[in-house]
Image 1 (cartoon, rainbow, N blue to C red):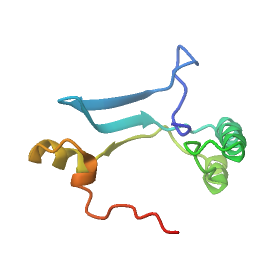
Image 2: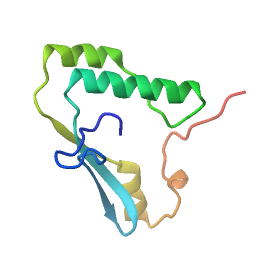
Image 3: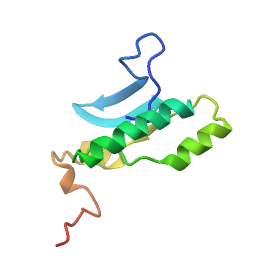
Image 4: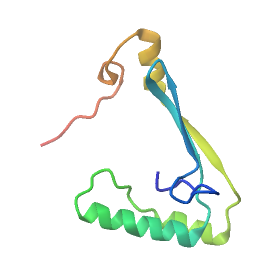
Length: 107
């Protein structure tokens, strides 16, 4: 994630984890990047990747960078995939079977 803080001892890594149950990713979390300059540079790189057609590159949030300039204490979070937990509880193998509002591609 471009919002994750680099690892303290190895800058090639980030402080991030994923939780798997029965082979299904149900949660992931990370320590938030709270250095405004570093986050700005990461967003610039993501912006260049998007312009080159990388659909997985994140949309830059420069308002967030501005907020970081004011100061943000160390923080972290975790995201839990409720749809993936429903997959586990129902025994389904496709996430498409449990998403209540599937994405519809419009012409």
